[in-house]
Picture 1 (tube, rainbow over the protein chains, first blue to last red):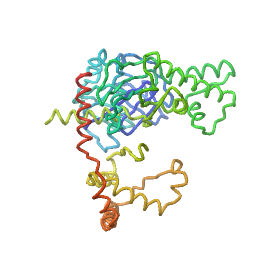
Picture 2 (cartoon, each protein chain N blue to C red):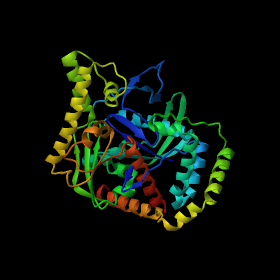
Picture 3 (tube, rainbow over the protein chains, first blue to last red):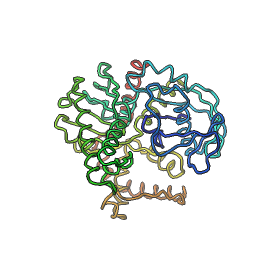
Picture 4 (tube, rainbow over the protein chains, first blue to last red):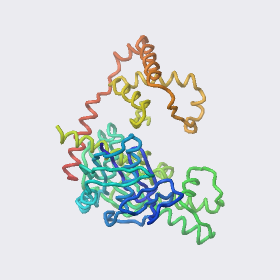
Amino acid sequence: MLIAVDTGNAAIKSMNTTFPTGLTTSSVCPSFADDVIKYNNEYYVLVDDRNIPYKYDKTQDDTFFVLSLFAIAKELRLSNMTGHVIIDLAVGLPLEHYEALKQKTLDYYNRGHVSFVYNNEVFNIQINRILVKPQALSAVVVEAQELLRLPTVFIVDIGGYTTDIALLRNGKISMEYCRSLDMGTIALGNSIAAKANSLYNIAVRNDHIQAVLQRRDSLLPESVKDIIHKEVANYAKSTVDKLRELQIDLRTDPVVFLGGGALMLKPHLDSDPRIAQARFITDPKANAIGYYTLGARELTRQSV
Amino acid sequence: MKSDDKYRFNLQFGSDTEQNRTVGVFIEKLGNKKSKILVPIIYDYLQQHPEMLINASKVKLEVVQSITQAEIEAMVKQSIEKLTQSSELQLTNATTPAINSDDVDNVLDNFLGDMNSKFG
């Protein structure tokens, strides 16, 4: 069974699941927790708020391996697969970090037989083949039929801590535009929280921000809502500014925005006169779907 | 997504329930005639559930597991029989160019090859 996991800084995504990149550890079994894994005599609990500091290299400790185990367990449960299961794993890396981190990532997941307990259910998995795919480009698969036929299209994947940029010409990857910038929605959230705290002594969380942006009910005062809208507008503008600095002129080429940040910034990107034609891939699982689709094709090729 | 006066969608769902598997196998069997079959089926459903048209984004869909495979197959069979009896469908099938799934395969294979050569 092939399982694809997108280990984002803001959220972990698989084909069918998504959850925040938030984890706590404990040496004793927590009493009140919905998502618990016991691995190597340690208990890990998923939490609702992202709490993992940004790591350029996510293979430095077991954090992202355990987060991947959560995604794997959830996928196996959805498929009613229990007991001993052999899996192939497809994961991804930012474009510009790919070369430097690919082998490390392969080694990180190459653990052979792994036993763990997820919510009182024992899982014995054998990690067989591991595939590492470039993020952003993999997500194109979601709309491959259209995007891979365009003469040119920029791909901009706005994640939690990184924004990946790529250019496709007639479905071929133009390496000169492949970039991974250290900018994303986590910095935006932190900036909003800092301003709300310093000006009004109000603690603003990510779910508050999402509620305001989605025009849902919110108890936040109008002054804080204004901060959120202004900061998001500024962030959208600075994203386009940054692209322009990189000689990417979106008045002359179409662009596809994706990733969690794309949805947040959509109204402002849509109305930016410096963007002639924008599309949005709104499924936050797009990269995971891409890893799976491309991984499945690759494994099929290998077995022929 | 609507573009160039055409609607184009990517549809994805898990194969974790009998309902999903039955529908998945059925859609797969439709080959190049997916839209010709699915559009009238969904249209028929909307005629019976006009509340869905009022604000589709707020409609809460609940998966009802109690429906049996036999019931789904009977519904699908009924819909296909109804559609194949429709002269309009037969006419449009003859005149509308079909989407070639081989093309999609080729596009994806070429993309994967290019990706692997540059991110190998």
